[in-house]
Amino acid sequence: MLALRVLQRSLLIGGALLSVAFVLGGCSSQFADMTPADAQAHPKEPGNYLPVHDLPPDRNQAVIPPEQRAKIEAELAAARDRQAAASKDAK
Image (cartoon, rainbow, N blue to C red):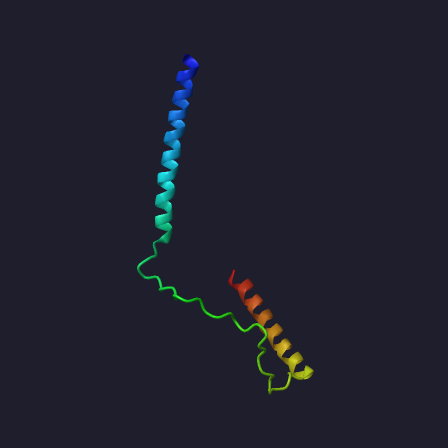
């Protein structure tokens, strides 16, 4: 008799928990569908796929010559060294 009451009580508690889970699950799906007031509207039809195989046109400018590239890299390295020294002095 006692086992039957324990079983009934556990079924009652389990049913209540299951009901609460269903109710909360239903509410969360409605909240997930809501959008903020300032959100942009989604297009009704999805856009086309991006052109994956379309390549940009060839450049009409020549590649930087090695001498000019070395000069630019040296200027950048000098600027980096000046900034590193200035930041050490500021600390």
